[in-house]
Image 1 (tube, rainbow, N blue to C red):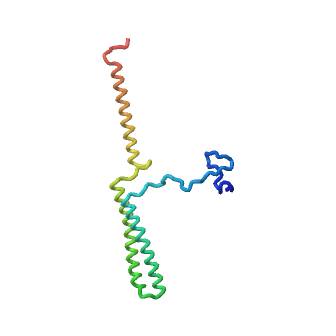
Image 2 (cartoon, rainbow, N blue to C red):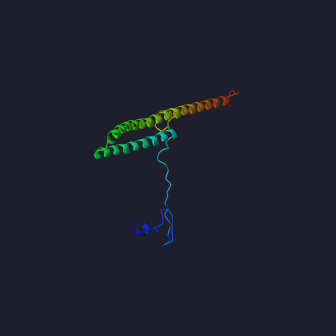
Image 3 (cartoon, rainbow, N blue to C red):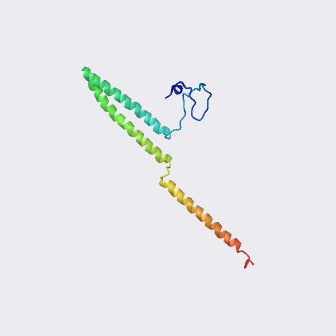
Length: 151
């Protein structure tokens, strides 16, 4: 990297600047999202799962430290850690189930390789061909209508 680029004096690509002119660099560059936003119920379940998992990890660490210290609190903390692990597992499963239910109720985003999209395309092509055929037949009938010959 050139020193001019580090100082922000180099012109960004696609622009021209006078020699020595200082062009401020942007601090925030907006980029398009790579993935679609999670639906609200799924996001809520995911946040809940992350909070429960973090509390369970903290609880397990406290149980470990109490065990090392020989505290009387070690046994109850280990038991509650086991219970917390079960609850954390349940919360992660809840995220998965909520996501599946949302997809079933609201439909999934169609992708180019989707069967539904391919079937719609085939139906559209068939309808277009039928309309073209009907127009062609109507045109032939109109041309020969009421006359015996073109002469």
